[in-house]
Length: 341
Image 1 (spheres, one colour):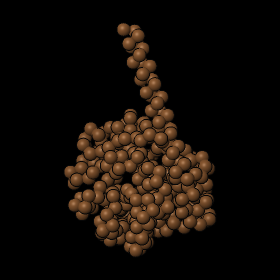
Image 2: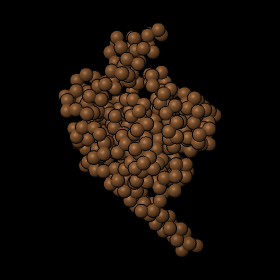
Image 3: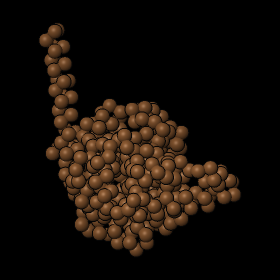
Image 4: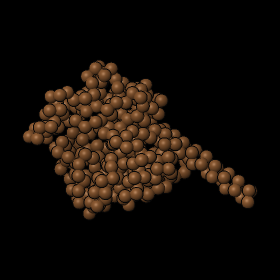
């Protein structure tokens, strides 16, 4: 299969312009190793490792078995009490890139730049994209309305061109892509340099989550994805299981009251995040009625449990199929004009 050359493939020295998106509890060493071998760049949330020695050991294993590039996703606000230590480890282990989320990337950029570590920043609007560009970010991850996890307010067709008109660094699309045609559209129509894809890789043998979670990604579709504020306090996408329907997707009046209290909101947010992550963790690894499974609308494209390699190969084949089709149309139109003249 031919390469898909874009500024992202050059930035990360990868064959295809795809980042295997960081997914809480789902991303792991095995998925990352297979992603690198398949020609794409994996990114793991630092929070997926409980302890620093586990993070170091995991990064070392990936390096030894697959090389790189390998990325780390850092939550850079106060809800992540391990942030400072995680950043120090990323610098010490010389990861290839970092994706920052939910906070200012300034410290990350300042510490990583001298070591050649690329910093990509999650953004949902122009104002923040302009800010991180000024701080020295290498690219932005344009999180659109169809993203899994914490989605943005705009569709990609609106967000990406808007960002490109205001900033000069590369724009990577995140959200809603589940096949090669989607990748082609994001790059050739919207103007992104690549895509960050996560949800379609949940139902893989390499993912460490339960078979029930994986099968849910096969059985449910885009219409079954809902936003809930019960996990982190911010809207987050989950599969609308019977349990989610039972408990609801919005904070109750007391939770909202505490979240708005100036003195308490920092601690409430940390507690909400902790409790939410615990419920997600329980559902991810065990068979339980209390199912809170995080996923995005792109599970619509998940039809079976397949390997990271198989999914990636199909994405590339589909992409080249669309490219060939578009080239044929272009050639036919050009020749039609020549004949008429």
